[in-house]
Length: 205
Image (tube, rainbow, N blue to C red; front, top):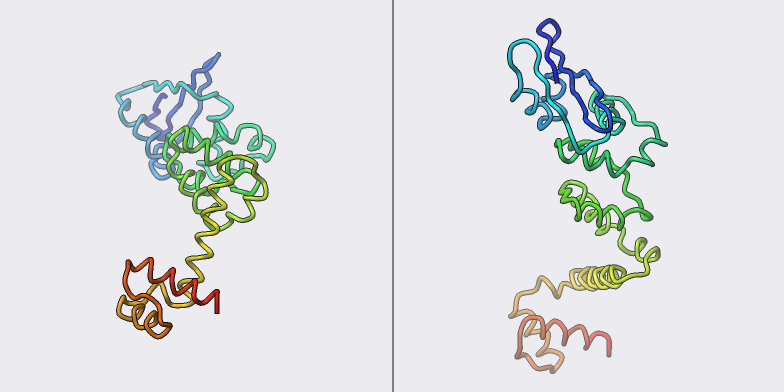
């Protein structure tokens, strides 16, 4: 990456099969891609300096840079290079891009597994939030063990909701025992046991 004093530009050299220079501005990188900006600052000397980026294809880097500058990545490019772009965005802390990644019922699990394998914390959190809100829809698209996990989560979520509605889950122990006594049930046991007994009694009645 080279620096010119006149306009404060930097030139990024992305190394793949070939080297491609890419121009950028420090103040934009500092705001939108701080990790990338830090690389520039660590090599900012007098005259011309170079920062070489490896592990990313030039075409992917240019798309990321386009997004950093406020442009929109073409849909076809996004579809074919989505994971590479997300990976690069997380590496250089381009938080807004990772968070704006469109999570759908069809791609949620793939994105979750990818985020976990690459340690993409922002994307992983976004997908988990999506699954928590849309678990039942995602279940219909799945055929593996993750489906069983989501079924259990959805079931527990419904049970928890019902408990809150009925008030059992937030009652004090003394209140639970009073209700059990009124029904002629055993008032001993853990809080969970008492709640379960009251729920069973409600179903039987």
